[in-house]
Image 1: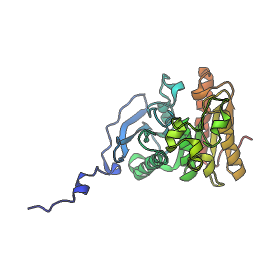
Image 2 (image 1 turned 30 degrees about the horizontal axis):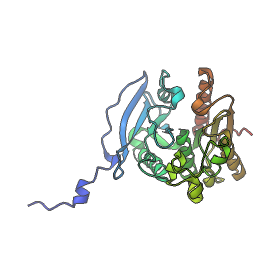
Image 3 (image 1 turned 180 degrees about the vertical axis):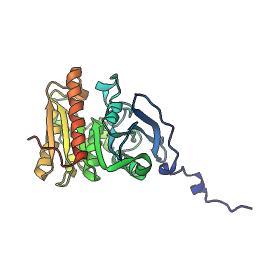
Length: 303
């Protein structure tokens, strides 16, 4: 009789870095899309997946954008760059691929599935998966830019401050959970409420767990060797106030790191209130910054 296998090993899911890749779709001319690629398995939750957008024609290993979606850590989708770009054509991810990047837009566990630092662990696992399959996919993961919007910007900043990457693009993200309640309009935020987005992320009301709130804040992880940051934040953002972007930029400057902080006049959260041309400028500035991060010397600092 054949030997009895180790049951736990026999039932374990296959290692994602060894799974066959799905067939490529071609959603836009000159672009390939590997949709729904598993990059990690976590007990008790769905497989974590990413969509990988690639240019059709390449000349050498591609720089990488690892994109993390928003949604208050409790919702959101990896299929869009943010609500302002939901109906744009061509798809913004396809545009980034045409600009010469491999774009990995990744799921992560939501706060209803696990609390911090699970979301950061998942973002790190997505980067590890890209590194493991870099040769197969033609990627240069040494030239990776973390990019996120809202909650995804929070995670992108944490990733960039805890794992070596070439740069970070952060759109209107929370950066210091300990000061956020006091920066919102009077009466708009109750730090003792255990049902806020931020409380659900850390598993406790902010007022009851200041150490957890601090540990989950990008400003607490800033250091002199941080990669270059581009921080874009709307001046009319009432959900995550402009002061949050200012805090991260100030902390990076104090540490001696490079940061380009750009308030976006008239913009609310998610770039609400911007015209298409104004939203286009935010996207173009971010692409230009990412190119500079992967092309050589860091981009210049805007005081």
